[in-house]
Length: 100
Image 1 (cartoon, helix red, strand yellow):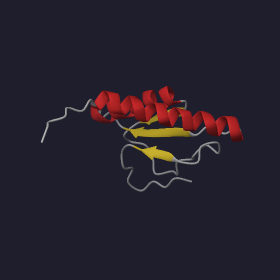
Image 2 (cartoon, helix red, strand yellow; image 1 turned 135 degrees about the horizontal axis):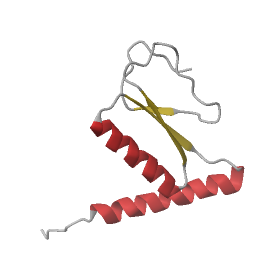
Image 3 (cartoon, rainbow, N blue to C red; image 1 turned 30 degrees about the vertical axis):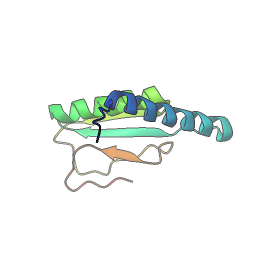
Image 4 (spheres, rainbow, N blue to C red; image 1 turned 180 degrees about the vertical axis):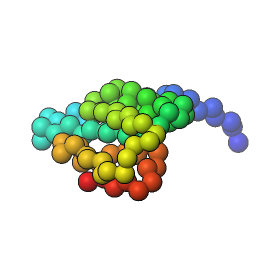
């Protein structure tokens, strides 16, 4: 059996291209552009890199994106999801918090 070396970057670029086309199609057909809200709590460097990567990739494929950064001592009051955003990506658990 022959060994075949795959290029992860080439595969990722192809997937991004396909997703970008689907997003453009949604916008063209329905006037809707999906969005990603990433909520990061605290100062964990790994979370910062992760969220930055998600926000960057979202922009590359045509998504609207927003990064909400909260201090680690954020109170237990409910987080409010902006009405224009159907979902949020939580990058750290927030004990006792709910998302409305």
